[in-house]
Structure formats: C-alpha cells, structure tokens
Image (tube, helix red, strand yellow):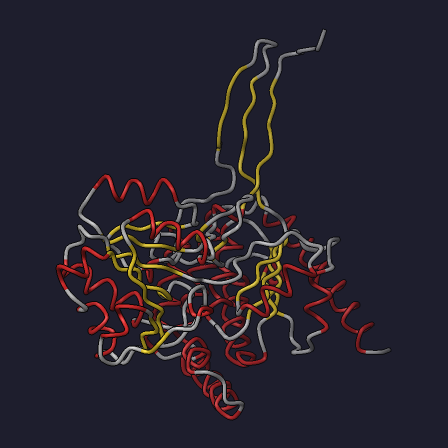
Length: 421
C-alpha cells in the first residue's frame, strides 16, 4: 500500500475514534473533565524531566537545520514555561463548563418556549508548527468544550509534543474519559495535513497555528471550515495626548518581550505633535534595546535608524525589527492600519477618551487596546486559561479562541401539545 493510502487509512481510523469519543464527551460531566485536566497538569509537572529531555532533542535538530531565532524561541521549553503549561491546564479546569449554557430563551405567541443552548462543535483538527505548548492548550480547551481533537504537530516539535500528549492521555485515563478524545498524529508525513484538510466526514473545524505559509496553505486547500489568522501585523499608535512614560513602557514591551509571538508589535506610528513635544525617545529606546528600526522621512534623522522599504509596512518580522512612521493625527493612523494591518491587534497610547473612542470605533481588528501592550493578545491573558489561536475572520469565533468559542448551539423547543394552525 502506498504512502497516500496509508495516510488516508490513518485519517479514517483516527477520525472514527474521534467521532466516537466526541459523542461521549458531549455529555461528560464537569467533574470528569475537571479531573482529567487536573490530572494532566500533575502529569506534566511530574514528568517535566522527560519533557525537557524530549525538547532538548528537538532543539538540537532545529539548530542543525538553522531555524530562525523566533522559531527556536517558540520551540524552547524550560521549567518556567512548563509551569505556564501547568497553570494553563489548571485555569482551564476551573473555568465554568461552556457546554449546556443557555445563551438565550424566549416565548412565542404559539405557546412554545425556545432556548438556544451551547453545544460542542464535535471534532477539532489542530495543525501547528514549532510550539509544543499547543499540544496542551488545544487538548485542554477542546476537552473543556466537549470536543475531541486530532493534533498534528510539526516535525520541529515532534518529540516535545509527544511527551506532552502522553501527559494529556494520562489525564484522560485518570478522569475516566476516552483516551481517543485527544489524539496525536504519530508521523511527520506531510500527506497527513492534506488528509485532515479534506476530512469533512471526520473533522468539523480546522485550526492552524504557525507561519504564513502553513496558514495560507490551510486556508486555500481546506474543505473543512477553518479558524485562522494569516499574520499578526500589530500596530502601536502613540497619540499626541499619550503619557510619555506609559508610552515608553508599552512600546518597548510590545516589540521586545517576545518577538516571535503573533502579538508582537510590527509597526510603530507616532503622531507628529507627540514627536515635536517629546522628540525621538520611543525610537531611541527601541534602538538601545537592540531593535532595528526601519523608517522614512524625518525619522531617518534619528541616529541608528535604517531606511525602510515600502514592503516593510505591512510585514510580520517576528524578529527584533520594527517599521516606524510619523502620522498626522489619529485618522491618518487609522488609515495606515486599515491599509497595512492584518486585523489582529492594534493599540492606541492616549489619555484622550474621545480619541481612544474614535480609534476603537473606526478600526475593526479582532483586538483593540488602549495604553496596553499588544503582547497581551493571548487567551491566557484574557482569562481563558489558554487559547487555541487568534481568529481574525468574522465568522463564529474572533480574537482569542478559548473554550466558549469552541462551542456551537442548538435550539431546545418545548410545547404542551402545541400544534401549528
């Protein structure tokens, strides 16, 4: 049997198991899901040496392949990051159960009582690249929302993801839930990605987590519905009424905290009046921190800046690089973001309520912030425990996709011998 047939058979086997598990999870109690997630958290911490050893194998292979610093940062695990995974699992466990929530209810003149109630999506497929933490985040959120999940991690994180997946399955077993609820594709054969994208019989939604190449492939070839964002081209706008010290803190954090995450700022817009009043301090702070600032016009007079190419605006660097530009007021900033943004996250730095309201009203990115770092664009920071991704589309889920966003709904209609005339 050739490789294509092998992958097709594997997809059918995993899909059938996932469907059966999803049917059971749809009515699993809050207590059993809680027990599974807490047990998984204990397993991750108890087996941390094993996970870190697996991650060391992945890191060695990644360095031999000359992966970018951003990719290496996404891949790397240490005890602090494992503690973050553990805390995320615990937080998701403590969330209220999103399944069975009454979203709305009303009576109609015929005498019927109608409820719209949250239900699981069914089976979620997650395709991701170098971040092994996605194994825990996606598994936990899907489980919380009563969904089975099929995980297809990248070759970069193969050993790390398998080690974390073993902990998730240990949790399921101890919680009395089907181990097929969280499955991992145990092959790096890329043909399996295509199988998942076409698996309309088995998978209800696909979530890609990775670079532009992966997400673009998924969006162009998937027959299964997709929750995705293509790029995180995030902007920070320093308004004329910004507080200088707040602005300095936020800009530096938004760019430099972690450059390889989708919430990293990729473009800084500075109002001319802010620049006239405070000078190039925001640019100078970035340069001192080791950031390459690509700019044009007046800002090129700032020592250490680099002339920007037109394509630098609207580019996701995922590196210690940022594009910067002077603008004449909030409306020009809004116009620039509409032209070059990706609909992910934008932040305005201002003490002026009316200006902030205008920014919020006239931009339609998934996340808009005021006086806060774009690095907060994360489901964990939104109180969701974790996220399965940031969705920038406008259908169903938008922004951080947590447990509640991984549900659909059904209508429950109650009558009393009611007939339609």
